[in-house]
Length: 204
Image 1 (cartoon, one colour):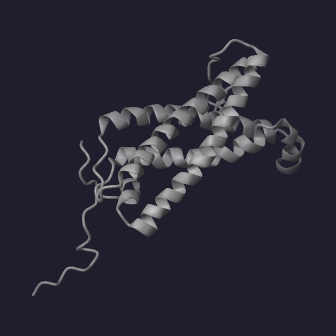
Image 2 (cartoon, one colour; image 1 turned 120 degrees about the vertical axis):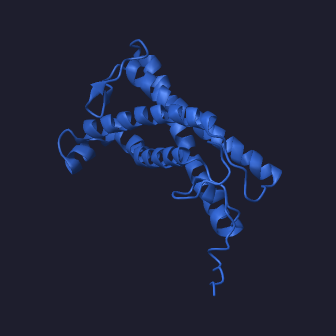
């Protein structure tokens, strides 16, 4: 006599993004969350005495270089994400979203791409114009993309800071929306990008 299916077995199969897209999403998310505090704290030279006293001599420059390295890595991964977005279509929603919610979701994702790529390019250009070193995890030096111009560097890095604050705000909204879909609506939106989710209907 066969066993009756459990509620978990009977749960609907909810579509998810391609595993590569999900992996890129979570890797970039971890890098952004790691580098935001580095950017807020260790790019302000007023914090250098405290940083050196707390973490030791050379810590400020090392952490600043780590921020630059992560920024360039995020830029590279975002370009890969653009390719992956074109390569693997997004799956349909398990439960159709209200039109305004779907528009908001599309806008927030587009804003993430624009802000992350823009912030990285502005930071790269600003450091190039300063000019300052651009080590990439101690492996090699990234090329300068702007000629030395200290005044231009200040404007570029100021714009970079504004983009960074916008990213932080959007991260907070994004996390709140994800939790709302997961805990309140339970509509499968969170599962589309959840680690370990089953594939569903997205295309190979």
